[in-house]
Length: 547
Image (cartoon, rainbow, N blue to C red):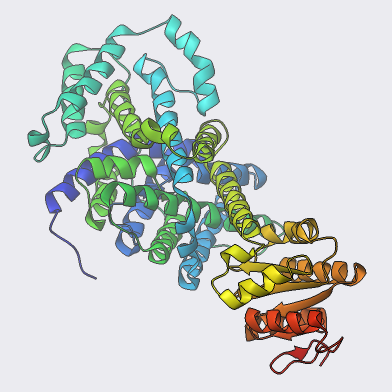
């Protein structure tokens, strides 16, 4: 395995900064899971190290995240605190993620539209800011965004001004730190050191406090018993949530570094990390957006930064906890407010009103759901709505191009036939792969545009590479309408694939005659209408649909 040493200094400083920032989050999420702070620390160490070592997103920092902890907390309650089964679920989730990566499922996450990613990024930024307001004011931050917002009136009524001054001073230092100095000492790390020293000698403010220490115990997987179904269900949910969370963070990292991650490799790395997390008594984790952004902003670019972040946490656990215990919460809050502001997608916000209104509404919806509901719901809703909107747009284009009027036909011969028999021949041209979105309107559009006295209906399928079941049913409806109204239906230009699919599902081709091209179909229409062939349906090149 090759390591890129071109940005070694940035990787080390980024990893150091991300490790220090990850420490309180890992402790808090460990407690929230029910498994304790040390489980959060070892989850951050194991997932962070192995996901970086085997993953496919260079600067990604992985560790415990909110969605994963919610599942673990529910599992903890359901299993009455049976840690052996909980860690088994974490290991199984890791195995499933490796399978996802091997099967190539990761590539589909790249299809997430930009407004969804933008809303997700901005929502994470808003959450970070909201959660840090109470620590800035000298209070503990309640769990959850809604809890933090509800507590703000009380926090503002009892402001600890020394804490606020330290936090705002840290924030100002991060913004004012010269970029030239940042090459040697990143602004967040400089502010962290300066704020800690200042608070140690001049202020009495809340600090991180005692850090749990000690080596992990090995937790082998346990199988069997009445509760294994709960374990498997939780493992599946953890694997899916962790994969989505990680790959969305990978998209954020791509957006910041202008590089492209390897989705399936990233899933394998996350799976290996979660397996070792469960084995060593750590909680499940995923790609962590905030910590990844901290790493990138501090210079991290390769997997070395993620591994450094884990080594920093391991070092703290094994003996340097007394130093980290003096870090003021207000200093971390100031740094994290800057991180939150940086994550908000200001570049899109500033010009969103100039683009499609639907994209702006979609971005705002995802942002609101991210902040007030949860990340997975926000992304799922955004992707579904974006997909439906896209299908609708394609369907409108297909329906709009449905009728091919004489003036839009290139062939002068075809145009002349249609002009001569404009009240008797109705031609419809389908374009592109007919989707289920367009199929819903096909029968209605054909009925609406058919001339009352028309005798022949021609469907030109030359530009249709595929048909789905919805489109096939629509063609059958059109055929039935034509038969009921006494019109003949000719199909033209079908590829062999379309012809086979239509014949297989319908039993036979639902038409009076089939032609290799539109030109042949129109020439036959002319012959029929001129009476040269009376009512015969045989052609030189066409074949009867029943043949």
